[in-house]
Length: 460
Image 1 (cartoon, rainbow, N blue to C red):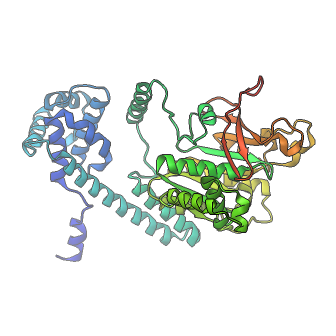
Image 2: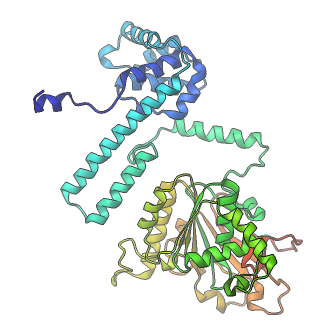
């Protein structure tokens, strides 16, 4: 075949038979519609007439209407949603009959749906490749910029959606209603978000929501890294999902030593010095058996940018949580450590915005640690406030949840709150603010649920 004819007849990947088989199965057996809706979207159908039939069935499904050849025919006639070249009722009726004829049974509908989805993903890859090629040829931005854009496009394909797609309210509403039904069935006892393993905090936050940027801030020495590691360990153990930890301050060996001390209940000082008793080795062995299967990924590169973190997280399957320790140590997006003309406050604000965007793109909570300014040191009541956020800029605005750690015995040796930490929830887009008490175990550098009685005024 001549080159010009080859180009003319070259088509994007699709399988007409599979598309028709999926539609025919749904027309024959409405019971399979829900399963298909969980796999496919209208844009997964290559042929326009098939896409229109699927959109009609999807709309009827969302409104809980009966679905069969006659009802779909009537709906499409009312909406005028069929191909204009075959808009008369006779042609429409004939095509729906043809769909049912090619599908004698709905038994293999999910296999047909897999074929349709496979071809749809191949088309999305081809489109992304064309867009990446265009970026390279136009020469806009350097290699790092193009590479970041390319990774975003490929990641969007892996998630089964185009970065430019907009979604109708109907399918989104159905997902919200299904989620509400699940919560209602559990009498409201199920946490809608990701539980972090501290019941008092989970009760106030309702868990960490997908796409949430959670800021955990404290003055040095308060234990913010320890609490973050506690949360990471709790999430990894309870969900069996992957947890990514980016440490810009401590080495991976130091972090794992802290986690081991926590899980084995062996004093961290003994682990650091190697002055271990025989009973300690037994605890360490048992803790290692628990920790080894967990999918906790640690990166201790101190020069990481948000773009680097985003790219690494995209490659992690079944990601549940991202932890960043800590915001003020991060390198700017350009990797230059901050241009002289750019204020540090603006840089930190830009990075917090990028972290929020990363949380939305990955659809997982991002727990970011932050330092506080010295402003609280000058007050009589040294409990931190939102205004104490260091280089605050847009941090408070970007974060969905802001939590502070305060230990009274850090400032007062004779404090009655010995080894008791306050977790102050100063901002919460999804629930209430206030404070809860946590037990602090300095020998294990770990926090746990506080079992003591709350005094008047302990909660806001």
